[in-house]
Structures are given as C-alpha cells and as structure tokens.
Amino acid sequence: MTIKMIATDMDGTFLKSDDNYDIDYSEKVLAALQKREIRFVAASGRQIANLRTLFKPVIERGGQIDYVASNGSIVATHEQDLYSVYLSAAQIQKVIDWNAANPDSADNLIILSGNQGTYISNHATGQVKEMVEMFYPNVHQVEKLMAIDDKIIGVTFVWPHEEVREHAEALEKIFGDELHATGSGFGSVDILPKGVNKATALEVLQDYYNILDDEIMVFGDNTNDLEMLQKYPHHYLMPNADDFMKEKITQKAVAPNTENGVIKTIIKELNLDI
Image (tube, rainbow, N blue to C red; front, side, top):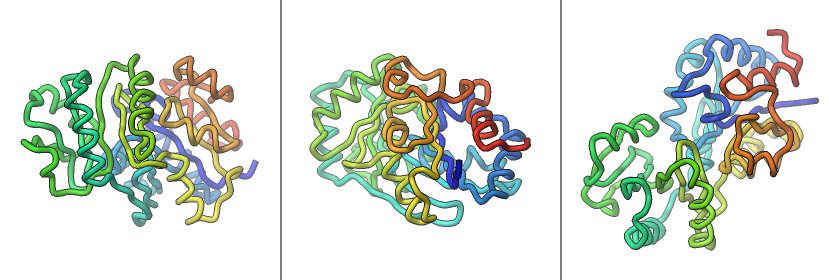
C-alpha cells in the first residue's frame, strides 16, 4: 500500500472527547509519517482557527498539519491557505427566512461562521454563547445577522444528536438546488455552498501535492464524512459510528475514537515502528 496523505475527521473520530487526544502518541506517529513524506490532514466541520489551536501542541514539536475546515469550505497546508468558498448574501437571507418560518432548532439558534469571527443573535443566552465558544472562535452577539461585515463560510443550526440526520436530509431537500446541508459533530447541521464537502476539498490538496485517490487514507464517523469515505478506496469508519453509517461503510478502523482508533489503524496499515 502506497499512502501519501491521511485525512481524518476530528469529533468522534480522531478526538476522544472534549478536544482530548494523546499528544505524545500523535507526535510520534506524525514524525514517522513525515519521514515517509506522508501528509496528515485534519478534516473537520470545525473552523480552521479552532483546528490550529487544537494541534498547537504537536505543531510546536515539529508536527506538520494540513487542514480541511468548515466541512470543506476552507483548505490550507501547514504553510499557506489554498482555497475558500463563501455563501452569498442572498443565500444567507434565504436560510434566515426559512428559519423564521420554522423556528424549531435548539434555542432557535443560528450560527454564522465567518473569516473574522463567529456570529450569533443577541437573543442567545449567556449559557448558549458559552456552548458556542467551546467550538467556534471569536464569538460575537449581533442585533442583525445580515448586517455582519464579514465573508460567511456557513450557517449552522443545532438539534439533539439523534435528530441531526433527519434535519440534514430535510434541509438538503429544501436547499439542495443551490446549497448543501450536512450533519456535523455535537448535534449541528451545517448549510454550505453547493458542492462543498470534505471530498471536494481533499481534491484541492491532491492537486497541490499531485496525489492519486488510491494514495489517500481517510477516517470518519458521521454524515459529513460520507463523501470522502465513499470516494477513497482506503477508507475506515470508526466502530463507534451510528448504525446507519455502518450500513453504508463496512470497512472499519481497528478501535473506536476513545481508544486511539485512528492512530492504531495507521500504525497497523502502514506497519509503523512506534
């Protein structure tokens, strides 16, 4: 097996819980991958600022991380930004108008992710703002979402985890002609520009590094990972994934996220001496 790039989802896949991962173990594996000139990509629904903070400990020790952030809206190497795509004002307004007529998400919360920050309505409680700040950088409460002076990457709603798939599929039917709806971590549903997903974002890195599909290994657990799990032959679903994902993807990592499943599978498949 010739592998030149490894891309992994974060929540429910690489991370154990609450942004926790084995830093020393990860550093050793990243060092071994770098010796073989294998790129390591954090491919997540999280914003890129969050991912860079998350991996700061291993980066400070010499680790090199590339990024597919915001479910494919942002692509960057460890050295430079490569790609970004944004929602138009008309698209954002359409989503906000839909929400006004269908206010059933948790706390009727709308999260707008931008280049310069994250934006939520003034009606959000302090507790809700604190929850958003756990996953999004530079959170601002604003009176009018459409008055934000920033480029918006995506719009996020929050529902109970068990309802995410249902709402993502419903929103895809509503907006599918010009937008893409996908479930993400911790009960969130992201509305993104049409055609944006982790697989299309990885193609940007493939072109940059001249890497073929069968030279890529990918890991995921949720619907926002489905496109890349289906596209690349060397794909691994986490054993902790929901049953509906196991019906679509049968090849699994050797252990769940809580037991360093991504790292252990990389070591096993690439025969690393760690």
